[in-house]
Length: 287
Ligand SMILES: Nc1ncnc2c1ncn2[C@@H]1O[C@H](COP(=O)(O)OP(=O)(O)OP(=O)(O)O)[C@@H](O)[C@H]1O
Ligand SMILES: [Mg+2]
Image (cartoon, rainbow, N blue to C red; front, side, top):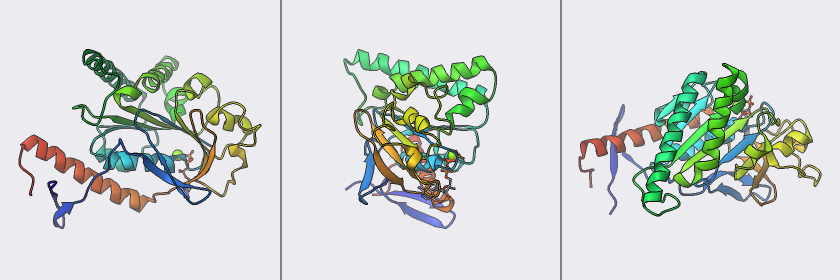
């Protein structure tokens, strides 16, 4: 029988339920036939684009919620606005607000970790991490790439941010670094084709033009009738999802309101803290 985890809360001792795994597909919403849409995120990255109010942060929060409840992964959160991902900060290893210096230092640390993991895998004659490895996958969630890569700070620093991010997206997959990044500005200066194509999953919420939609989904889809410009501005969370080598599909993202996010985040933080304390204390858990 698997051990039961208990935690002390304000209202007494409660039994903690089962957790999720980052190696499981992540539920993001329903397709146009009402069927659930699940994305395997391990060994992959997700790009989310769309105009302001399209529902990008909603999708990002759904992914982060799954990651927070997955005790087999760690979180790094970047949020210039602070309030979009702020509720998850107690679940994260690091939370970067509107500070480009902090963002650069976290990305550099992730890059060093990535290189060391590859050195380890090479020494073990392996090509990717598995659920049995001692080191855990990282979900790196960024709400508004353009804020860090094109808005604040000095030009040189912004360029360094863009190149570090590109490196993580390009090389991080096999060592369990999953980047989920949103952008309000699906323009070629923010998402050059070479960067876009590194994201296995791409979601285009409503876009103002066919060309912005193509920047997220890939060149030529608008001409074939798949443009996120056709999505109603009164339907936030609806968008076109495409996987590498696949065709777009219409998805309505499941929305977690503030109270639900807060409740999940509190539960996930308790779960994580309890497990960490158990490991640190080396105390046996209640049977
Ligand atoms: N999946 C959804 N279902 C229903 N309503 C949603 C959904 N996603 C978002 N909304 C509504 O749309 C509003 C804007 O969503 P959200 O903040 O996710 O947009 P955004 O694309 O991140 O905007 P911005 O670019 O300004 O950050 C939300 O406050 C919510 O009311
Ligand atoms: Mg947002």
